[in-house]
Image (cartoon, rainbow, N blue to C red):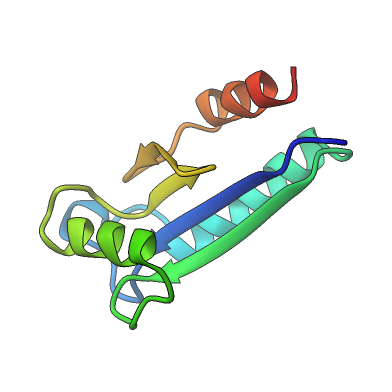
Length: 104
């Protein structure tokens, strides 16, 4: 059975001050989903978007949303299977390497 690979991208409708010239968090989620699904067509990839300004459904989501709001992280924040792998402007090559390591 293939290992599940779940991405959660945290962000807000309004871009963070340091991310003005970057895509929105939702755009980043859609871009990562398209790029990684194309690169790993057989992998069990899941992508979820969390709006940090909305009430959260789990303690983990609440903790990370609060950390972003408290400026401990920049958004978009990319979490892979519970591990923070990127913030602000994610590096596709580095994220793909993380996926390859999980699939190995």
